[in-house]
Length: 633
Image (cartoon, rainbow, N blue to C red; front, side, top):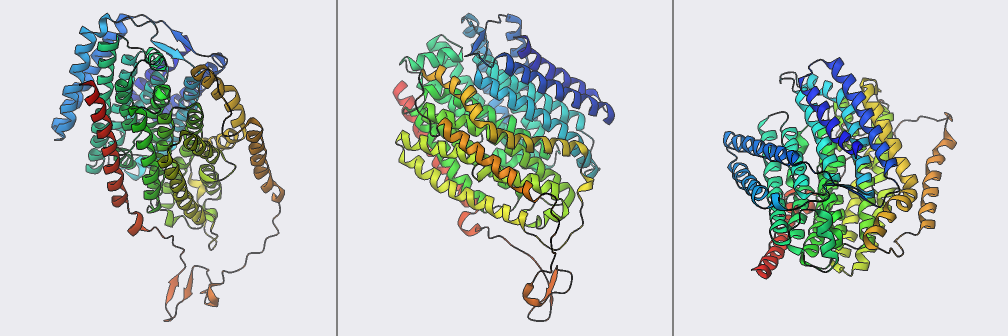
């Protein structure tokens, strides 16, 4: 148990140290050293609990409960004041409603409920700790070089990097707390810490757009927080429990816990940026790139899907499960179509994140062992690959001056190493035999087995859209234009270190996914579901896929060192101007060479898709809670 507390407390202590440190040299040393320690501690914890079917810890300390309550009140007062200051009154109202309910409950009801196990660690917790501890730490190291460039480009703004790194490490601390908390009151505390951290990180630049988007994220996540509070009140008042494992046990024994499950699933939906709440994550693109990577890969949205996956055994074909699977399926379909119309690389990644999280949420809603297997695999592959892509885009933006996909022509010539990393990341998201495609196949099999025809149609058409927007981007990357100046020497060594590590991780996890499945995920499922029948992919097929990937990796090595290449001019109908960048047009005008993608805004425009997605998911959620509350009342 000591290593669990170490991860939570150490990350927070480092955050406090970074808040007061102003010197770049000292910050660099502390961040790098802390990242190594956190990653090493995460790996040590994984080895310590590798063979465990789940361990619960009885940590009785009344003082911790009161400290958490005091912090919650302070945070609520801060939100209330900031909401009034910026005329975002809904945020103030939500803070004024949510926290008093929680304080009243803890003092009058929760105080009298015995909690035997405040903390737990199982194989899913271990997987999440590895994601947070390794990927999250790598992102903090990447941030050192990136934020130096960011501050250089925004020299007119005050240097808020101490606050930035403080928030990054507090985020990691809170995420460690979320994935090991069995006490729902503790889980809620860490949940709200991540909400506040995301608010300040999104609003980091304090421009009008950043402030507007940060409050949107805050309000939407406070709605989820209110649902979380109501779930705790219902469980404590009517069931006499505050432990997640007891709630799951009741549900699996046939005792109806549909209402609290639906409220917690709703909280997970808001945190995972599912429609109708996806706009907060899309608005987070105004923040520095490391923030986007952290929110999308190892923290925040992963907290939402983690909770829904934990709830999976009590979901399925009840109102809470149907609501969850439909919201996830609709989000995957609509977000995938919306991504087609985007040329902004960060927006494509954002919509892709929302879509893939939709698949995970839908799997959690189905609740079968096969669906949960697919959900966990999606979480793992998405965390590594998406963090790589976000950081690659951030580095490209700082060096080519744009994050637009249309400006990435010939990136191989200008930044060949970065382009290679990006291509590996893109291939990892949608091509066979990389992990994301395998996970989607397992997801489709789980959807078919569930008998939900709507979900099957959603994944079929959504996956087709996924193929479309990734292929367009990949085409721009591999297009060979005229010889350009190599500009990748300006990339910081910290950035190269992290990008290289994430690229290796992407390949390694794709190669080792049969091992991860056999020794981590399947044993976890056997504890939850008692028996696990055949999965979508048998062990032999999984090893065959890994062997195929190994061959894909080895194939380029056959051509290593062979430099007998002939560089010839681009044809351009023979009207070249001599530099391979321009040609003579029909009116004897000099025309620049360009390759343009078709983004089909008229068919899949962002506004049109979002309206459809918001309306349909709002109808699903309102209908579900109307049925639930109608049954209760």
